[in-house]
Length: 629
Image (cartoon, rainbow, N blue to C red; front, side):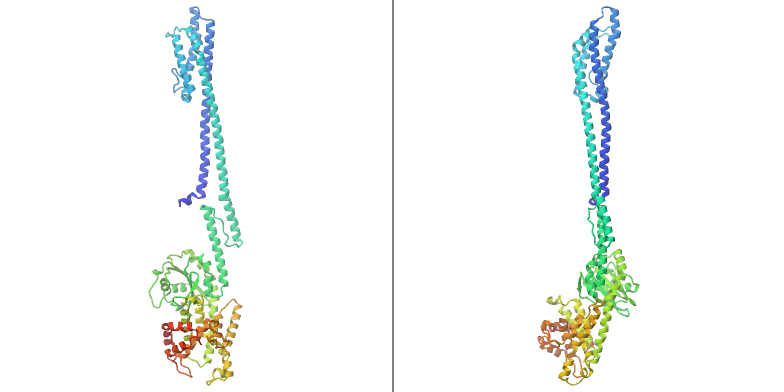
């Protein structure tokens, strides 16, 4: 805080003004004092001139007195009245300046120059001269010995004259030195004031005017659409803080518009979560983001997509009830909701609620942003942070302003995608009903395939391939594996006996027919910016390929077969073996697993079979719940 205050423009400008005022005040005080001293020096010089004049007059009058000395009493008394009185006045002049016994403090020379050696020497000379003169005059002031005094003045006046002349010269030199010092100080003060003013001009230009000009130009650039433009920060002063605020504003505007652009360009919800992460992270703090979709009746919600620190992750929990909890409040009131501390709002319940799931992942604060659908709230975008109280009211206000935009984009990606997938799933179910295979085959098979995919995602070698999106696509598109059967004639598809070679060839075309159907759907969706059915195409075309290359329709081998198709192949056969059909009874699970082990490496991918065997604890509950025996 102190460092910032020292760097502030207010402090520095005040300091410059104080320095400038101090120089002017000091120069003014010095000039006044110096002028007074020069006046006093002139007085002293004039006083020494009077002393010199008095010395000269004493000598001249003494010489004049000797030319016409008094020879009678009348003449003597005349000289006492005239000459003696002049002599006393001259002595008073010296006494008034140098004192009767040397310099005295109350005398002008004693006050202002008493310490000068010339004054001291002049005082001593006058003291000696006066003592001798008084002695020559005698003790009776009424009858002074004028001739003796005159002779003393003539004999000793040279010394007093030299002393007064030296005093006059010394004081003149002191006055000249004082004048020179005065002029020198005036020049120094002027130069110092000029330097301070130059520093002030430089400081004003470099620290105030130039940054203000750059700030003004920066605002013009931002106004013209150059979002992200940054200003140089001159320091921690007011303009530096203003530049930092401008840069933050510019960065936020840039992030905001990039966020809008990325939202509009996102092809699917999961990609949208990851692609907008860097820009959204500059606007609000977050460690986790999730997309939740509400059921049509509004009683439950599904966590469809999740991302942690910019990377898509597999949701820890998929299903939530929304009759209670913070999610219900946000959706029912149709407003973004801020949760400062997750632990304060948790109400343990069964099944697990959203806030419990977030808290278990050490996420302590969250924002819930409702997503508007055609007939009410379709779900919510949830942002969460590991820090408590991470979301301020400003974040809530910002997300409220962005709610319409994000809702629109999510509707375009999520709801449209689900609508298209639902329509194609309906087609897949139509194909299933044309087949004599009955029961919940599609439900069981998609759950088996999803469990196997999640298990494979734990393999370090497949972690980059089996992403949460891959697993979700397997779940969504596994039921479409036999969608091509809609193109098989009934007399072939529903034939109870053995198929002829021609009929078998026709039946074996259903993977290609399914691929063509889904490719046409993908082609139409690409026209409006969607890419949905790539995994569905791989499953439809590849689920009858064999790992050893003897499958159909293309005879692909090993890793040439898409992993999604290899997973669905195992799940499909396992369900077919363990389910009752018109032409066979359901196999026991142990027999079906043994058969899968036997054909691992030939018909099936060994890693997929192993993943299924490792996931039996999850697969068996699905089998028991939806079994068809």
